[in-house]
Image (tube, rainbow, N blue to C red; front, top):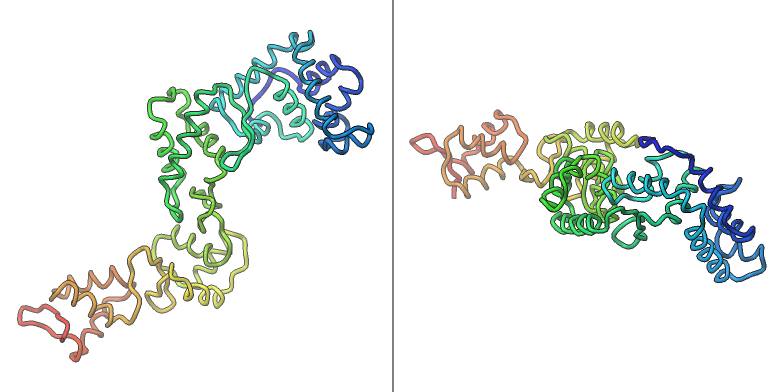
Length: 345
């Protein structure tokens, strides 16, 4: 719990419910989980107990909330709702409902009372969950619209399989918002809260952000885990090391042989040495070392020993001696008078 409020939500709920007839108060208590049970009852459940339709229960609920808002009890609690609006403002003026509740309390029972007060209050607004965003509350509709639009632009700029460090995506969202947002909102905690509004963007266990459909976010198996640990490592790894890193990072059993079999079948990985795997996106080449050397010479033309070794090492994770041994094959390679190697036609 990070935010302290000056009132007890349960006491305020109890005070507001006194403005209603017994049945109306009971309907709200059960629908919002304000009683001894924290379970929120459905319209059907409440309707069955009263022998009325679910639509009639909905009408009673709507009318009861309206009556509370017109009551003296509500007027006496206006400072409470102003305080709630300030909390939302402090969290960035638009905040996911789940985040808002958890910032105030970690109790499910208290969450129900806070939710009830949010629904009753008129100093802020709610945007229902849809295909792109989670359920959220806002204190400033203009800022809310700016943030939503900026998040959608960020989503469109990220490729399907692209992963971004948290710092990168925060800076990207801030860049999209530009000068339209007051500097007081340009804090990392607020921007991360805004990112959590999106159902299309998410982060993985390593803290990388991307599209929800990305294999780096929606991790489905050994191959995706291997891709992430290799990406994090930044250089080729033996498949045994990859398996160990998967176990350490994801707390999942990964046998070396199984990992080797999975990597060799996935074109995101390339075998660059004895049991050593790199990511294809790093530019490494497959095939025998002599094939790599020949491809480089055919593409670049004659090269000095030093330049050729550098070029091969950019393609394969291989020792210098291995390169020199392969260059001794005179059926494939030759050396000019000025010491440059070339591919034999």
